[in-house]
Length: 167
Image (tube, rainbow, N blue to C red; front, side, top):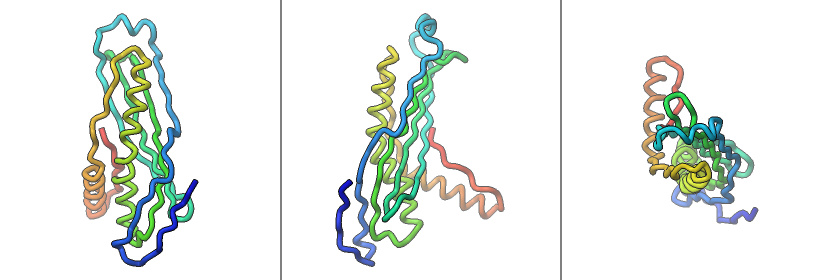
């Protein structure tokens, strides 16, 4: 893995985010009711769930994982379930403020990973015999802002913080 050698600076204008690697960490395709499911109506109901996780590595490196689960159902019968964990390793330089670092990891990095996850999901769904599912764009900045607002409201009310999810 090549690591850029930027000149360190305390100036926040020199903050940098480097993408070190993008990879498919985990993926699965399940069709528990095949082949009988193919006798059902042609269009199953599609549900998409999206989540993220961040793991600090070393030397300002972070692994960000975008988890996407697509479930297609006819009533209570699952036609297919596709799960993709698209990951990336990002290097953040000159981020002295932890809140800014958290914002980059929670919003910018998943936005970089989404096109790769979209392609993986479409490819797996196509293998089921159903039309590909195209993930819609997600505004991770807005999702993160909403999550932070909920956490601040929960803290003000003395409650436990809620987890952020995108659906």
